[in-house]
Image 1 (tube, rainbow, N blue to C red):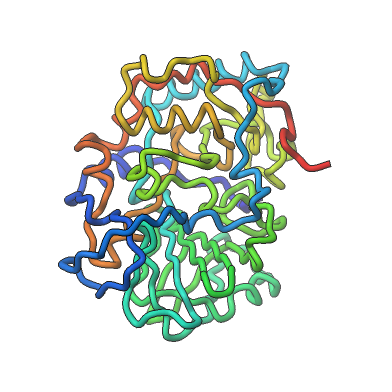
Image 2 (spheres, helix red, strand yellow):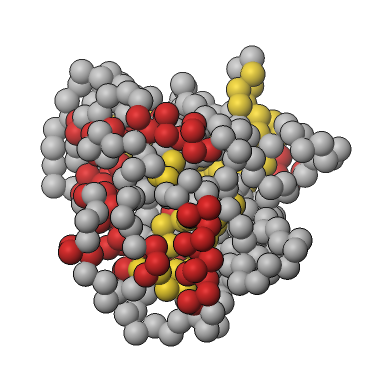
Length: 373
């Protein structure tokens, strides 16, 4: 479990302003595997590559498994759906797509045999890293102790020069080394006098053999689920298709000791024992019988709705509003490209993109849905 409840009191205002800022451009997401210089003027050559760098876990990982249309539903599905709708209506009456704040920057790097300049794979930048660093521990929660296992995981981290965590109090950042198949997630990440430090996080080695979750108690989301699995990337939107489970954050969830696989912990809080609180880790999907093309959705909203029918969402965190995380534009701007989301969102604010989304047609899967025997 993340050791404290997330601080999201200003989430909506910050994310709306962040989502509207900057210029957009499809050049930030052009498909290419050709090395380019690290400058905004460089135009990478387009190829037919369809590789997604974000599929880093085992092919059997739940992140990549569609939900069959005839899958059984949770006996409490209808009540959970009403709970979700109530949360959305109570908190800003929309679902935000977090971009600059409360959405992790994800930096792909190559430490062995990589190019000297940024290269691009299907619209995703891969950064060269000349040296690694040891990330220090910042006791932002006043625990009064340091976990030696965590410190060991934070040795020799290949952080690109100029990397930035997300804005907002959570300051999330992820690093993925393509050379070693190693993932790092950091929470409350910062750099002071050249020294990187974080308050919590973790490392996953041999990701291609991993089911797609940090071991308890490591990782940055409240459930131990890594950002790289459930964030929506500019690459996804440029392709017009999201081929993975999406993470979703709720405002209220079942108490911390009630959760569903693939979560291995929770930061849920329900002191009044309110009924029908949804456990973190629960899977949910849009009713597959809904005709998404007939709905008055934005283009991105339609993509998310179709992915919600096929792969669904997993509840991975609490927040100040019901929200989804995009891959932070820092991931692209460090390579000299503009923030891709204003163009991909059609000039809409991040809180407008999911307008008219049929949240009342969601279906919840049984507890521990998909857990291996």
